[in-house]
Image (cartoon, rainbow, N blue to C red; front, side):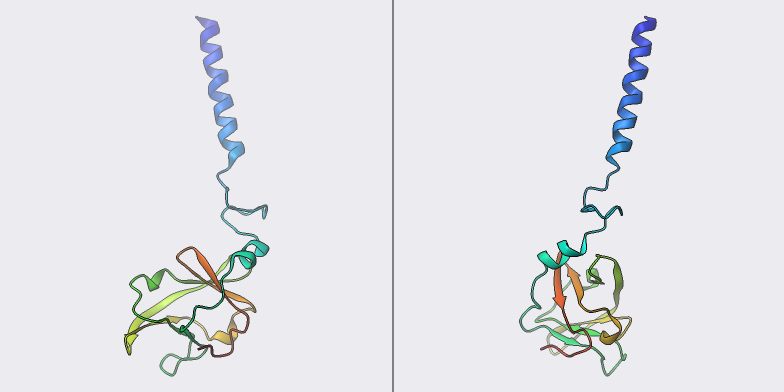
Amino acid sequence: MRLLSRFSKILMLLSVLALTACGGSSSNSGSGEPGATAAADIDAQSLPWPDGWIWKPRSEGTGTLVILPTGILGDARSMTMVNGAGEALSGVIRTGTHNNRSTIYFNRQGKDFPTPVYLKYREKYYKNGNPGARRN
C-alpha cells in the first residue's frame, strides 16, 4: 500500500513538471514572449492593403488615423494596429458610418506609427509600408 502511495505521488509530481515545462506559449515562434509572433512571421503572412479600403492618416474630424473599408463592418472594434513584432500599438477608439462605409478611428495620426505597420483584423495582418500617406 505504501509503495502505491509513493508511486501515485511521483506520477502527480511528474505531471506537474510536464505541465510547467509546456508553458502554454504555443504561438511565440521562438521570441521568448508568450503570445508574441516573430516579426518575420508577421511580414511573411501579411496581406496587401485591401482594394477599396481608404487609409486617411489624419481625419478632418478627430485629427487621427481613420480607416474606411468598403461597406459596413459589424466587428470593426476588433481591429488593432501592431508593429512588426506583433505588439499592439493602438486599438479602435471610435466607429461610425459615412456614405455606406464604416469609419474606424484610432488614437493617433498615421505618421505616428512605425514603418511598416500592420492592421490586425480577423486574425490576418494587412501591411502598410507608409502609414503617413493616404491610401485609396
